[in-house]
Amino acid sequence: MSNFTKIEAHTHIGGGSHLPILMKLLNITDGPVLELGMGLFSTPFLHWACFDSHRTLLSCETRSKFNDFWNFTDKRELCNDYSYHEFNFVEDWDALDLSRHWSVVLVDHAPGPRRKEEIKRLAHNADYIVVHDTDDKNDWHYKYSEVYPLFKYRYDTICYPQTTVLSNTKDLSNLCEL
Image (cartoon, rainbow, N blue to C red):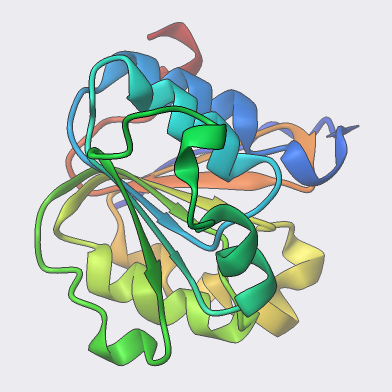
């Protein structure tokens, strides 16, 4: 029953391969954004993409190096208003409340095998779930193939490492045309 689009060509753009699809989705949505796993590419982009409209952004991280890097005490170095962007250091992913509705979710957190659990938890309360590192050759580690059947729609990007968008509410067959 899945409406599945896959493009076989690959272009290697490195660790930020999820940015083009995130840019697209943030331009066509306006609800809250959840970032599971902070990094050098997604966190600054999402911060500034949500800044002007004060769009709710929750960034969650388990690795102290990224949490400490982004959640610095004097945020005025970056900007004066952080009222819309919350940072959450996660000690236990099971304890993280994901029950609210999210417009866009980025799944790119550690430990990698844990990602499928958050995808399952978000399957019915997110419009778009953006999942990084979804190349078939990585399935032995992430086991994304176990969660794909939970979704009505799936879209794979052409960049390497591959990013996949999952949704149960939004038809992704024309995502590049939206």
